[in-house]
Amino acid sequence: LLEATPEQIAEVPGIGPILAQQIFETLSEEGTRELIDRLRAHGLQLAEEGPAPDEIDGPLAGKTVVLTGTLANLTREDATERVEAAGGKVTGSVSKKTDYVVAGEDPGTKLAKAQETGTEVLDEDGLLELLKG
Image: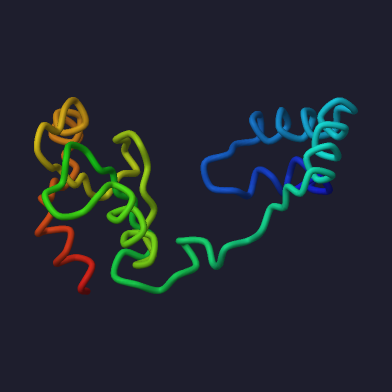
């Protein structure tokens, strides 16, 4: 990342040219580089943990999911891991790019936003069915 150009940074989904330029400039600052060097000296290592969700061929490949409310059987972390393992991406807010909203108990405003935007709403069982493929 420290060697990336603004153009390369802008290739990351969700990062446009303005944000890419800001990231590039921040990473180019001497103070930022010194901080990274100090963190590395204390053992910080950034490791790739496997393929990105959009590189996984699964039942949710290329799909964006938002979780809201409390699910009966899955923790939010478990649900996120399962969605990502199936090739999907979990985000924190509903947008035009959201494919599914999984609503548990006490879902809050994300459910209303999904209904406003016409996003498909699933319960936990619906998510589990999708994950089966």
